[in-house]
Amino acid sequence: MDIQGNGMLFGGGQGGLPPQAPEVREQVPRTTLKNPDVFIGVREKAEKWCTDMDDWFANAQTTPERQLGLAKSYLSPELKDWFDLVKLEDGIGFRDWPALKDTLLHRYRDKHVRRAAKKKIAILRCTGTVSDYNNKFNIEALKLKKAGTSEWDLGVLDSYIEGLPPAVMFQTDRQEPQTLQKAMEKALDNEAWLQQALARGGK
Image (cartoon, rainbow, N blue to C red; front, side, top):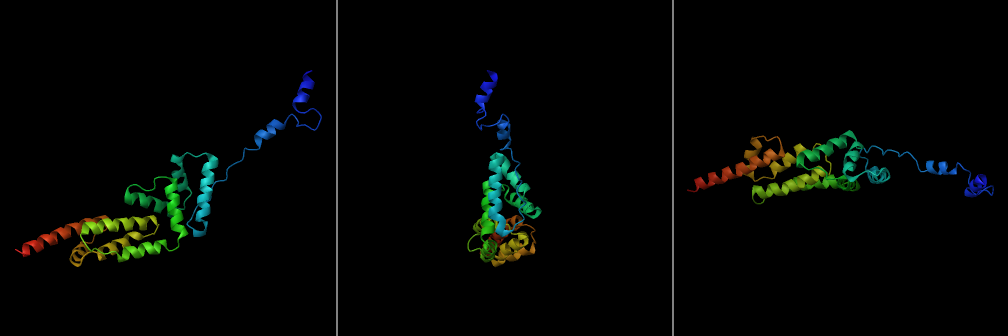
């Protein structure tokens, strides 16, 4: 009776599945996930790399809070430096993997994005108060950093000083600030000092 029962369970001798079939079925889905390639900044591979990362996270069931750190580990050393620079400069960095992905796709889809960002920085001029100029310049500088431009600091600093009103520019430039933040602080101080000097001269 037991033998017949087992035969009926697996289809008997009528071409049914052999007894070892359940073990075979269990082994089939157990595939090893292929790790993503390291992204080195090749424009033509950016979109595929982002898609591969999305697929990898989904297949590995990676929680959202771990995705950003893992994505960074698959960036080239140069892009890791850029990743850290963004966080160092704005104190926030990328919130999550979707934010990093959007920035990378924006940067590498448009081959002119960095050139356009540099051009906008270069033509920006102070037409009102230094405070207003600083706010506008900070916005454009952040766009340039997130566009991934390397060695941006010196060029941005020079562009900022050149966009100041002549008298403020002269005073700020001769003080030789080493960072954009320091230059902005000195420009505000110089503007206030010049306004006070003009007020005293008018009395």
